[in-house]
Length: 258
Image (cartoon, rainbow, N blue to C red):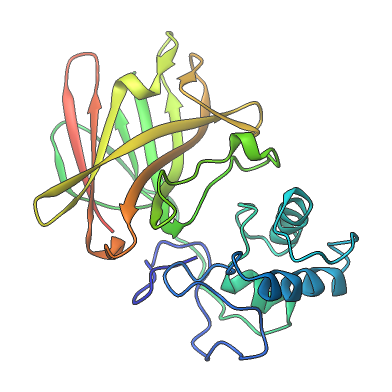
């Protein structure tokens, strides 16, 4: 999924600049994900999965557990993030629409944190010496989010109101200390837009990506996920993501333009 106007450059897959074909399943205009409220769109999408042998059940127009699991299989096959939610990129790949080739990523750079970083960048490792390192890789908008390898709807995070959307940023966190780390206690986050602050929740994946958690073992490493619920009319690409890290002897703020 991507912002309606300009998809962030840090997103995993570049959008095809061609127009979205009229005969493909209907998308939501804001998230560019499959419109799961339209039975005809879901059924057409299930047919695309079935044509590629990812979906073997009966077409039923219901975006349920089986369809989500099939979607993850397809996303893994095409090298996409396995979210379980079909977006425009996946639908076009299933329909053999050529996708633009992205340039290879440069080697990851790192920066030792001694002061606040007003123009933090995605893809850079920020390190508190002998405490932790953190890196954010991408940001996107979606209607819901599940752990990377979970098909259980109970693990899925939804907005409190169906008219809202989720802003999601993810990357990696590593515990460099000899003590367990409580991620929710060390990190605070918000999205800032015209002096309005929307609070973020901070998660790390556990159980091999099957669930969200809050703790990290000494010298442990895992996927870091930051989630913020926004009104649908807010343009996430205009927001600033503020992350405050409370270290043992210092407090550092990272500001990511999204």
